[in-house]
Image (tube, rainbow, N blue to C red):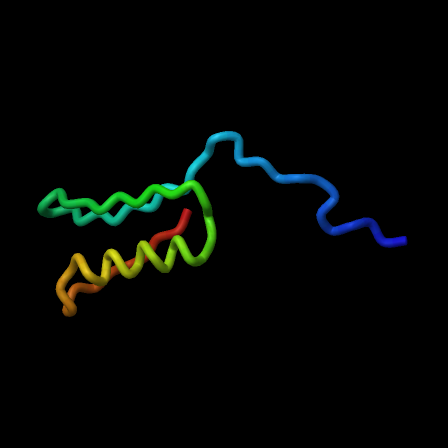
Length: 64
């Protein structure tokens, strides 16, 4: 019998997702903190960036 792929509950123990947009030259930043870490929160962050910066601005994503 194959064991369940999810045999325990995952708890985050108070951790949050922190996303940050940083523009070095003027020292401007856009923080984004959420209790959940799903694609919809990331998409929400990208929409905030899209609205905050001019259309010709190149946004580079760095993931760690």
